[in-house]
Image 1 (cartoon, rainbow, N blue to C red):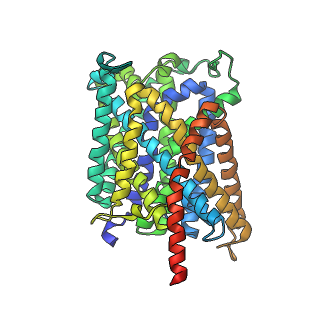
Image 2: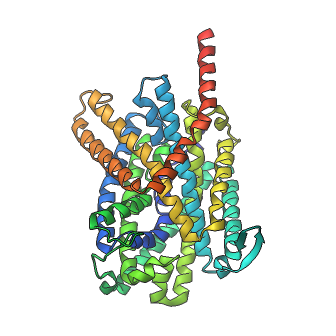
Image 3: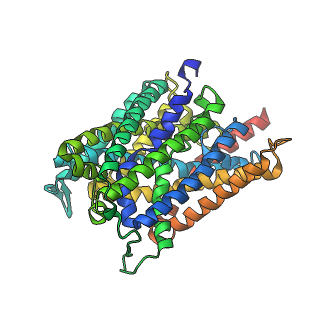
Length: 473
């Protein structure tokens, strides 16, 4: 890839911010209020912010210390074991598979949220009128039209990306700039409209499905899985490291992007809790629009919906780019089938794009039987747990470098990096335990990860054939 097609610091930063501040900013205020009281939500943000900061520092450090291991945090799994061993290939493949599946599920959350905000202008997207019936299944008009809108957005964005990575990155940058400006205006309005009474009682009771009271610690655990979704994408610059103009830009873009996104998330989620009463917020499909509409009326809601659509479109570009890049870079490392290496004239991994978005289309079928908010809640927990595996592995890999001294000859930062890696590891383990406490969620996550075994056989066969050919040569 020529210098012209490389990604600069600001484009990388926009990818980080754009991918982090996506569907979560629009839907999380509702999900969080359902999971925890205002006190639990704020505590979860603080814990998650610190934990993800440690993880971001790990990503940035590994990008500088191990520049040849490019393609995302899942790639570090293969280097945990002896080079060329079966354990190395298997761990690298399974970590990549989990991360890729998480991306595909995350794309659905992004795209379905776009349809949700589009319903501000086209209310028919939420219509519960019957469209047609086949056997025992009845398709609602709103669900059917939402499915069509989501499919058009998916394949329309696919076509844009195929025209070139740099041009798609610049379009993402413009959308990200527009969203940041819009959210700053929202924060200004929210500061004037904030009602402290809406956050009372500050430590409100939350009940589980059986009607039992949930402790504050359990509320924080529940909210932590959701708040982590807000930070998924912090590794975006690391995934595109091979396309960066300078490797140092990867670390700088990761840290700056994290702090920008953190400020937006904490500010807006707190303000929304003060603009809507807790009951209204819990039952809202469009919490930000409902919040701004209480202050500026329907016009304010439509303006914010327009900003939201621009934001989500930009995020969709970034996430579809990321989803295709993951298996492409893994194939470069021998962790995915060679077919994923196929590129078009613009250097876009075209085969990976087609397969990734084709599978994404299958996930979009969840909109046929679920409401927009129901589809969002279903995929974010599964996707978040899929991401935690490579996050955990990256932290453990950083610990391995610190313990063995690899790349640390005479480097005084070794102790500091070890502390950061240890905190990141502890955080990852904590969220994995919290997220898999629900057996249904645990089983869905395990099924998705285990499904990768079906595709590992062809890769292993190909790897053994290549090794036999190399020995014969």
